[in-house]
Amino acid sequence: MTPEQIRLVQNNFKSLIPVAQQASQLFYHKLFTLEPSIQDLFTNDPQKQQQKFMQMLHNIVDQLHLIDFVVPIMHELGVRHLAYQVQSHHHQLFKQTLVETISELQGNHFTPELAQSWTLAYDTIAFYMEQGAQKHKE
Image (cartoon, rainbow, N blue to C red):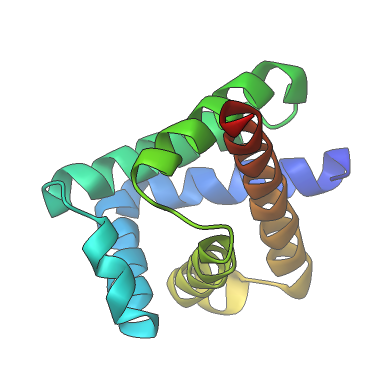
C-alpha cells in the first residue's frame, strides 16, 4: 500500500466510528447472507463479536502506516482465527463483505480509489494473518 492509500483508509475509517455499531451489524448481516454456513464459526455473543471486530479493525487501520508494529498483531490474530476454524478462502468473503459494507454506508463518497485502498488494506491484513497462522502450524 502507498502512503496515500493508507491515509485514505485511515481517514475513511474515522468517518465510520460514529456508525460503528451499524457498520458491524451490516457487515455480519451481509456476511451471513452471502455465506450462511459461515455463521457456524461464530459462537460468541453477536454484539460482543461485532464490538471485537470493529475494535480490532480500528487498531490495525490506525497503525497501518507502522507496518512493523502491526505485523505481530496480525500474526497473532491469524493464530486466534485458527481456533475459530477460519479458512484461507474465508478471507475473500470477508474482504468482499467489508468493501460492500463500507460502500453502502458511504454512498457516493465511496470512490474507486477508496475501494481499491480498502481492498489492498484487507489483502495486507489477510496476508499477515495467514502468515501468522502458517507459522503457528509449523
